[in-house]
Image (cartoon, rainbow, N blue to C red):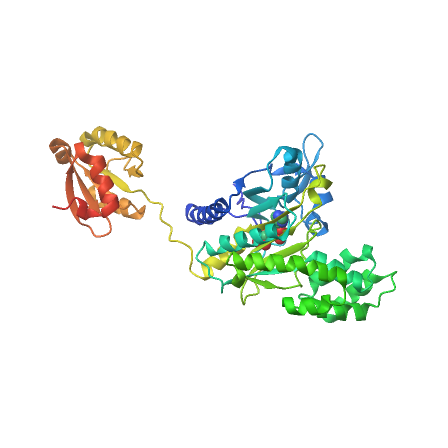
Length: 445
Ligand code: HAM
């Protein structure tokens, strides 16, 4: 048989990896529930046009798409936002607003596998629809921060960098960039931190071909604008432009709400963030580890026109996605992943076939009572069985030999400190419940 490996960029989750992943999902789910979000899910396979029309060029190059056996053009989902916009749009009129929804699901992008980037990854999505004001953006940014704080990270470990595509539009309009060129200029802004000055100038010239704008001059003012890191600096620039000044009222509302919710230390202003996805229309943000070059932990923003474009009503919306790959890397580096322990509470050691059926009856009763219980499916000797109990990470061993069965007792042995005590089998459930709560002292003579 040939050595058939899993595909590049796809992970296999052995139980210890799956336990870590469950931990991530639990923290995400708990945070979302605290904010009143309800869980939803969409198909993993969707019509190709859902993404070619709505996600923007970068993602389209990364689609896992194919023709299905019925001749349909389909794609695995690279993200969940277009599906969400379609689903909410279909029922929006009957839904109480605002709509707070979250989902945790697998997404697929044909990217070059590298640190922090895989071809299959899991993403938390949290979206708030039906509220156009910055109070909704603030709520999402607070939730994003709380999802990270829930892992034991602190405000010093990450920063949520906030920017604004609407402000960029107004700024570029004030710089006389023709409206139809603005999205392409934002594509150059997206590369500011990653490309050389020469490449940036070439890109700017290419984008501005056919317009009257001077590429070197525009590049210089774009760089100066992108370097802004405070509301005061923004206000100074906006003084010269009424449209920008009006937008800053919403910035103040956003920052004030974030501060009042207690997350001011988790955020910063960073206008180099413009986001690659095509549908964003307002505030955008990305969360990064502080002081590291790593890929983003999360990203999102406002997309007020997407629901309507997908056939729904005119419904303002904003949200973010947080990936499991970079979050796990960060938690690993900070030693914040919990120890893997999903061994049973009790390992029942059945010594001899006379004891087996009596032991099985107790095992069934213990499981009905909610305990995690394993036992030896085959007869075995004491030392080997103790070793099995330790290897699987059981907390306690219960001994069922012919002597114990004859006396109507079982021996309980702690696998951490090796103390032992006997309990009557008639009393087994309350006695073992007490052992799990208080330790061996609950039954030691
Ligand atoms: P995104 O920025 O493309 O946004 O992805 C959000 C997060 O998903 C990233 O910050 C990263 O943690 C993770 N991620 C993305 N691609 C990969 C990959 N190839 N490997 C590992 N992790 C990855 C969106 O997807 C938007 N739909 C988010 C959103 C929701 N906007 C509004 N609502």
